[in-house]
Length: 363
Ligand SMILES: Cc1cc2nc3c(=O)[nH]c(=O)nc-3n(C[C@H](O)[C@H](O)[C@H](O)COP(=O)(O)OP(=O)(O)OC[C@H]3O[C@@H](n4cnc5c(N)ncnc54)[C@H](O)[C@@H]3O)c2cc1C
Image (cartoon, rainbow, N blue to C red; front, side):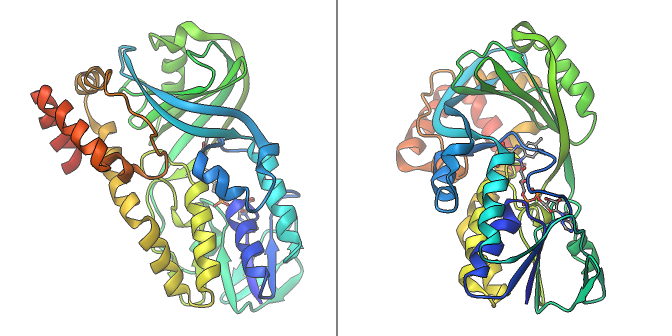
């Protein structure tokens, strides 16, 4: 029997795909999947299409996105186009869990614990042949089986009435006053999910964003409607050990520059099922598909280390760059032959940018 621990999207997708040909049980500590919500629900067009193979994802759509505005600390910004969707995580998680229940034995309100290789599932004690740790950032599976743990960022998100610059554009805010990572607003009708991701002091950063940001502070209307917070793993860790595999947040499978995990975990669930029972091949296949993107993503993340005046210079220089078809999940596509030519042209027309580009690449 394969035991999948956790019924977030990573667990439900794994149980569905493995359950087609194997004896699978999935256990979730809460009464239902997708609770509590700790996600902004922003996914790329490509990711949306992949999820539609497993559920009626259009039912979960809250907004369609056509691109993003990237703000410097002083409120200057540049624009990049790229299609994406905002989805309601609770609905997505529930649909995926219902699908998993067609292929796996389901346990809810059941927090799995381990005594050596024995899994305690409620009042039952079983010795699974394989264990899939899809149990999120606090992973009991990872701790019980001695996996290395990643570093974490904290994230805080509120929902508030908001005058978006464009209701189909996400807004990203850079600058040391608002985070040492980044802050965002994701519009939905006349409100927005407004959040900060940072190593520490997220509440203070969020207050700074809402009260002091030259653009955001003027466009937040009224008080906060909803608040949630959570942890985001910073980096991928080794995720296979003998008959135990981690997937999703438990393994640190998130984009290094955004903390978004929904695309990577879906790719991982597919690679796990394709390669099962060879878990080492699961690892190799995942890294073959996304290793290059993760490496490139870490370089993109170095932008957040720049000083405010350096961010100002970059945002100014990119104002007329005309990014189109920005792929949220695959930063390597920035280096398509067409883009490389334009990037080089922009760099050489702003010699100070060459130094900054090298700084970002070196880390
Ligand atoms: C504020 C915030 C905003 C985010 N925004 C985005 C975004 O816009 N786009 C994006 O792609 N990603 C986003 N993410 C990241 C995304 O939410 C995660 O990558 C994703 O939820 C990971 O899914 P998962 O299935 O691995 O883990 P989870 O969704 O955390 O699911 C783990 C499940 O395991 C269960 N569990 C834990 N321990 C046990 C146990 N011992 N026994 C039984 N069950 C257990 C939990 O109850 C939970 O249901 C965001 C995260 C945060 C915090």
